[in-house]
Length: 322
Image 1 (tube, rainbow, N blue to C red):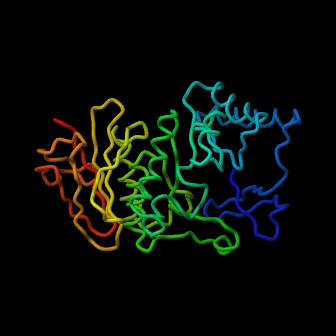
Image 2 (cartoon, one colour):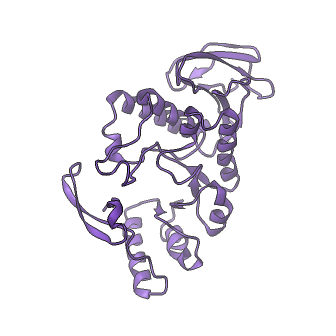
Image 3 (cartoon, one colour):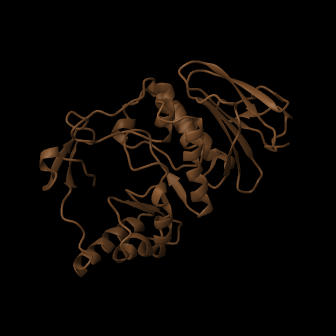
């Protein structure tokens, strides 16, 4: 089952079937219909029945559309999912973000948006469009550290959109000026920093170019294959001077056995980015492994290490002490 937003004129009362040319089938859609009535036992029983159906399939969590922290909703949102099956659960609500992280964590949610519940903006889009700079990016990525300290995660997704007034009829998705490289760098930053990340809509993903899909998936495979890049790994900024469009960070696996150095060029021209390794604990006489491209990266021969990056380029390097 899926849902889609109706036109702006019929938001209040839209329950109908809609044809999906992608799936070749009709789907029931509901948008802005009657809300859940906490006081009706039949409503509670039906929600529990639906949840148990999906939990029985092995699903590991839910994002509640327009979810709340009303105590009457806690059994459905938190208690039942965490007790019905024994696996760790990803539990969040659509509007949970870092500004209300404490409220969400106390209620029992295990994740929230690192930035906001917005389709067309995320922490990457704001650094490449000039809304923020490297210092603002660091402040934003620090939200992942706060969540980690609370035993939770933050999440985001690649830019997308379903606003009816702008891109639903006809339906189009937002793109970057150079989607084939920028969306790959978006993945390298957001997933690489420890956020849970993916494509917002499948019908958007299947329209990406083969090159984009291959490289984007390669980033996610790199993250999943290295403990230093997982959400549980620690994160700290590594200085790169005062270039507002350059950034670097160090991530260390939860068991302390792997360290990664990630370096980014967020500008539309190639540049050399020099990272300053003083105080990082990274061995300054080594040849790193290139985790994304494979093979060896240029050797580190001191506390200043320079990498050459194309426009919207990045490096994900294994710098574990050997």
